[in-house]
Image 1 (cartoon, rainbow, N blue to C red):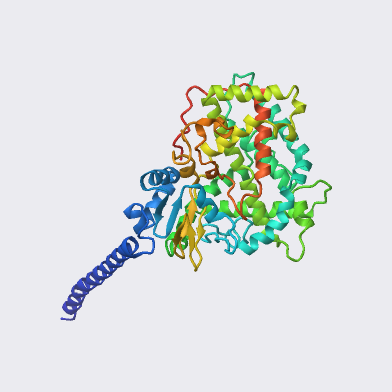
Image 2: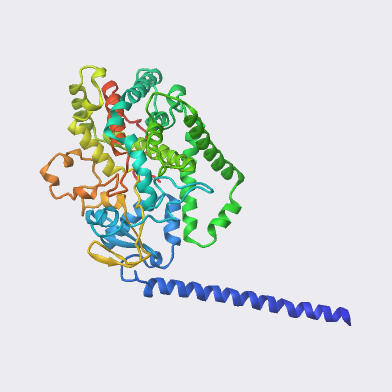
Length: 484
């Protein structure tokens, strides 16, 4: 009898368990439906145009981001919905010149729009860098770092950059075998920019050019950028970051820790070294008073400068080279300007390359066609709200200008998908172009502090390359258009 009763109890418990599960499932469905309906129809952003599911949930945005197609997707949305598009439940994307000033610029009587803390995160257990810190922290750090990127510092660093340009050309000659070997110019650009920025930041290179290969840390940096993109999406879903970190492969965690430890070691070694040669650290330490940067902040900023000052420059040069080789007449015109300006290689200096007008137009067109940072950099609307593009935007909204969408629309640029440097040289065909829409280094108080260094590197590397070599694409090279 007792046995029968226990069986009966078990049988009765099963439906009860199923019933509880069904109730919880129903509750979850109802909450989700309520969340979606609120976001689409009752949310303060409900009147802004955009796809239904983008307004309803973050899932479509995350899916497209992880596919590597976010910039192309946002361009399509702007072409369909207009200058402002709702790309997330609480996020708006803009693609015109006025929005640059409203979102990132300085306006009298108004505070800066703060960066989105979920997008600009500090490393686990680490300090914020000059890029990820808040408004007050940025003002403090920029005061110190600015000296390292001044025109005076750039002139002092020219001999160092020239040394790496010489090695760049030497190694290319050794490896091209009089044009018989195919070379991956993307790798060569990365090796050069990483060696330069490594020496400027830490007082020693990564020896990429010396060894004609990537330093392990440089390879890890690329992996860490991809991983950071993945981890950034977890902030959109409560509790997701904890779950992802718990399930992340051990190798991923070890790679992250190796990267962080190497930054710490590089900074420690540089701080202990006595040198009479000026590098970035020299300027930071020279002005590092009581309002200066802590060691963890120096480490974080050094890491940020390493990425921002190398990979982005190499990316731009790669895009420019591709488009030059796809447009032979443009390449011929640029080569003619370069070889006509310098009789000998020794004449190629910062001052000299700064006088080449067609070169600058080529680089600016490259920044438009192939921006190293194609996405929007989000800012947070404060409690009092803000006016963007002449329209009030409610608090807690994320706003940004998507560079790819801004640079590849006919609303801003005639023939937006054609590489035509002449548009920057007064060609009447492009008189209607909204040239202020091109802001690859951003605008306002938090614009890119390394703009002058980036242009110096881009000019010197490309001029030295085209002065010394004739280039052509590998015949079976796949198109770069639509890359992830």
